[in-house]
Amino acid sequence: MTEARASNDLWGGRYAEGPSAIMREINASIGFDRKMWRQDISGSLAHAKMLAHVGIISTEDEAAIRAGLAGIAQEIEEGRFPFSEALEDIHMNIEARLTERIGEAGKRLHTGRSRNDQVALDVRLWVRDAIDGLDAQIAAVMRELVARAAEHAGTVMPGFTHLQPAQPTTFGHHLLAYVEMLSRDRGRLADCRKRLNESPLGAAALCGTGFPIDRHMTAAALGFDGPTRNSLDSVASRDFAAEFLFACAMCATHLSRFAEEIVIWTNPYFGFIKLSDAFTTGSSIMPQKRNPDAAELVRGKTGRVIGSLVGLLTVMKGLALTYFKDMQEDKEGIFDAAESLALGLAAIGGMVRDMKPQVARLAEAAGAGFSTATDLADWLVRELRFPFRDAHHVTGRLVALAEGKGVDLAGLTLAEMQSVEPRITDGVFGVLTVQASVASRTSFGGTAPANVARMAAEWQERLG
Ligand code: ARG
Image (cartoon, rainbow, N blue to C red; front, side):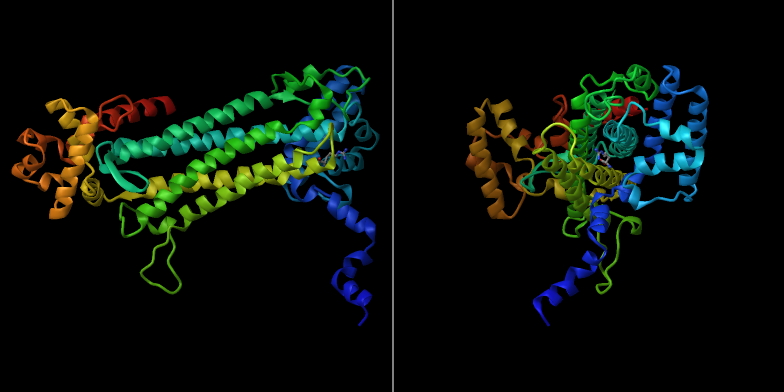
């Protein structure tokens, strides 16, 4: 077999279709941008209405366009729309079908606009809708967390740094930490929404148009705060999408950390929570297993969301102004990130509702690892007026003593304590329990159950 034949066997099949087939395939976005059909139709309806209003098209044409687009919406909804790869994208698919359905009037719709401003508009509208959906979902997850936090404001558990036992905290306090993170995620989405809420429609190909269009009118009709102010920027920029992807990536990262904790907590060596069959799977070979797959997938999908952000920035970084076809690559990442995050939020919300904190096990773990050592040091500062550094040192020696005897701090006798520091009195035993430790941390934002209950109530009020 000659080398030419060999290569022909490998990829000659594709070439046999001719270069135009490959061009069509690489050029087409209809496979994914059909997701924006609603936004495309909304944009066209607003544009047509404006064209009629300023007298660029007749009111009869506008009525025909409106009816035609309504028919198309129905066709798409019912799965009867003849999507065509040859027509490249959602914009040309809908426009071609419109002309097929209503004739001449359909051909007038594209007056004073271009696919460049059209696609910029559709993506903005899609992202704006996605923001609204995600915001509602995040709020729902926050409500689940707050409800469980209120329930477990006083349920003690170990607080960790370096995944080493650090100080006792409460399960409610831990859950409310995520409520704070998610609240900032909502804030980021809201900021992004505010900045993206300008209409690029009417920027046309890149320089605007000589037709007497009214961009303020279309902007208002589509719920924007106003039109974008520079036509070149309007068709060249996707920073709104990058911001959206960052907000998604950050939120997904928060969910991922929580998912990681669920993986740790459900591990039998920890045994902090139990998940039901609803969010775990068994092993096909090891009958004892109960794997936290949903949490693992929330953590795993975060990679895709971060990837979409990096992907978009990479697509944009080398582009001179204004539009290049590279930008068609923005969409799949945006769609995928939004969908992955939506699924992650649903899964986390479900697991928060499903999880059963193992209260006794949490309490036992909360007291392990000399977790009240800081309370002992603080007692030395408060009662014996030790400088904190010296208190830290004395406490370290007491921990070493307890460790050597195989007991926890409260298990040392007063005499043993006094062998390290003679001024210690039996008042010290009052601060060595986990309950006393958490109850003492009343500083604003601290772990005291009373604080946690108050914060949970505040959040309940805020979230409605
Ligand atoms: N499908 C294209 C995209 O997603 C629409 C814009 C096409 N514009 C152009 N000048 N070819 O970016």
